Length: 286
Image (cartoon, rainbow, N blue to C red; front, side, top):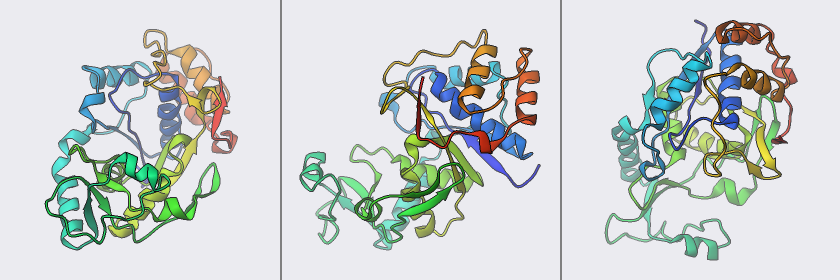
């Protein structure tokens, strides 16, 4: 194996749909075209949104599509101790603080939190935990999308790393898990493009080596309305995956492959994969 390590990280809030397949296939092809490893991580951070049996269903679907992963699946639900340990360390070094502000109050601030609770002495350890965002990364270079920038207010916001309801925030978990698994490049949908600045800020603040980023276009039914489990996108057919594989390849700007068994199709797709053909746009209407 080479030093390249990529990953696909679905959330078990429903079955895989065509938008999920694009992210899975794109990350798989990138990793295998570079003779690297391709890992799968289950982002089961939010139990209220999870669907019973979805994790196993997702893994069965990946197998049916020939998207076989290296090593064991990492479940974020088994990483709570690592997340809390990091939060405790940040709190003890005054690099994080408790915040009692509601969403309504933040909206009244203009939608960006203004640090209201930062200088207050909390009467108790309740509320959300926000990181003191000292790195404030405002731009990075994406492999496909090029130079990406966010506005200063977004880049400098002290964002939440543990929610008021006690659930760990995605921004913290994804950084700690990417570092833990040695991920060298994150390949995912462009709906998470600006989140990379916040994750880079955390990587820098925690003195962790950060990956590079490669964001793929997301499939949209109409502008700004991506395919997702939340809007009941139709599950992909794992009984006849060949047509969906070719449709996803076409979406990613790649040549289609001969209809065959899925392993043969993916081997051909890997051999002809060209990152330069991936469309440099945030979304594509389907």
